[in-house]
Length: 155
Image 1: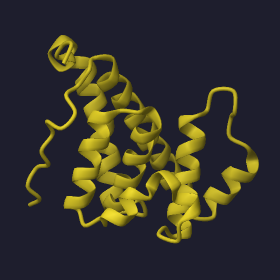
Image 2 (image 1 turned 90 degrees about the horizontal axis):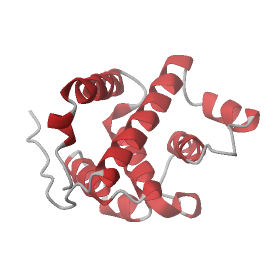
Image 3 (image 1 turned 180 degrees about the vertical axis):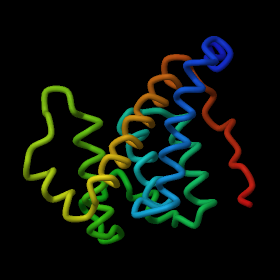
Image 4 (image 1 turned 120 degrees about the vertical axis):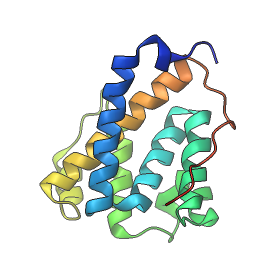
């Protein structure tokens, strides 16, 4: 790792962790769920090529009960039958928000996604996408060690 960005900017990282904690809390309380959050985090990390985060989120997803088959096929989710309509809507929203530069979000995608998520949950889903994109950029910029992450014990 190039540097320990947690110790370099503790207040900044605390703010990031506060947002992440909000996303996790709302995921556990409502429509998102830990399972969908794991797919979101993994897909964004795949798209950004963040090996540390791919390693982390696939380990967490497996520990949370996600199947290897669905994780292996995630980069080709459109071509597989392994995901629900709600998950497909979320994954389309993930990709549009991660590749947003020059593309924007069209009304048809917004409406299709809103069929599956309330205003609050769509906002929380978008915050989750923003958060993992930011973590990916930190991990890639400072060369976090892929493979070093170990999931916490679930309590």
